[in-house]
Amino acid sequence: MATPDSAGAIRLAVVEDNHPFRRGLRAIFDLTPGLECVGMYATGEEALREIPKAAPDVVLMDINLPGLSGIECTRELKRLRPASQVVMLTIEEDNERVFAALRAGAAGYLLKVATPAEILEGIQLVAQGGSPMSAVIARRVVESFHGANAPSASKDALSQREIAVLEGIARGKRIKEVAAELQLGVTTVQTYLRRIYEKLQVHSQAEAVAKFLR
Image (cartoon, rainbow, N blue to C red; front, side, top):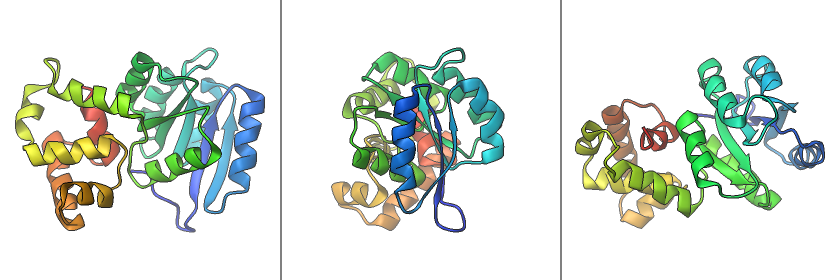
């Protein structure tokens, strides 16, 4: 799970081939307290060389990159730097490609048309262990879990309450929001999450959501 560094700042890297858009993001991040932009990369190849050394908490990854695609880059980056949480940047909600990115290890995605406030909120959410994604994608995640292709062992392992908690996380809700929605205590939800992690053999909320897709 991505967490802020010891100084409290979220270390952030961006992989985006559109120079004006990349420059705009940098301007936003430089003006945002609590964020430290540690790298801006134009290609997946460059990102794979530099990100393991830069050690960001969160990586914003363009899904459409020249050469190595954002999906391929995410898959390899998660192998090289598992601690970095990757959030895909996309122009539109291309369900199949976003779905593929989540299977590759992405923790969620943000639309490029999102406001600066929405992008910053998504970064904060993933740094806290959440998974920013639209309701459309979240529904597909849950449908995949319930569908014929989901591993039966995983389906059978979770209780209905645990599934409800995980569905809330898949919708991008924080633990306290899931607790309020289900009328549970925060400690109780955290207990359910620990059980989910054990049953699905994962170590974070983002991994648990991604497990739905396997």
